[in-house]
Length: 253
Image (cartoon, rainbow, N blue to C red):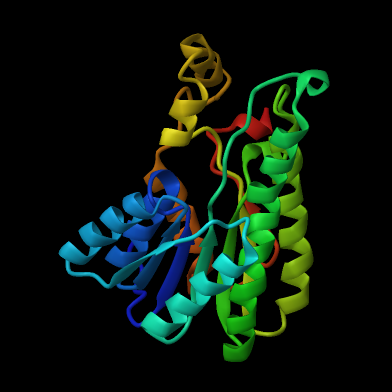
């Protein structure tokens, strides 16, 4: 599907690779000016340079979403470069050790919550300050299929991703009649560096993951990106506080 986002501005976190990068490219190809943010400044700068080389407008921003001042600066840099903020895709996240709850480390739990949940809350806080002034905007938060069902041995990750769904619903209600739409995607296992790294030392685990997906394969980053763009488009104008779940059928079993 082709979208016309000319004169629009999109901010994407976790944009240095994987789903975030695919989404930034998709927004740019649809005509939007894009701000790519990532903890890895080198990777996101490379990504932004490639987008600009293709004739699109892009900036790179180094940002640790667990640090409120950096998130505030990220939004400020976006506004300074492009003058407004129409769309935000809060995608930055991480996996933690696959381990039983009784054996999990408290620091891993804290890290999962800090990045995957509180990081999204920080991003929304400052994105909404700008969108509230404009009385317009669309935000998409990235949860996971683990935000809808339980995932054994991923308790901290699952808790954080469930939190994203709840945070999305609550915030969506606050801004539904103020020109701002907030929704959530819950992707299934997708071909990304994060997934590859998570099972790097357990290749047999990947076979088990794929066998559990009714479609029989992992998702592609571009497929997830297409869901984000749709949620930001006028075609999703009646979508408020909803979850869209591109997961190959995993959560409907």
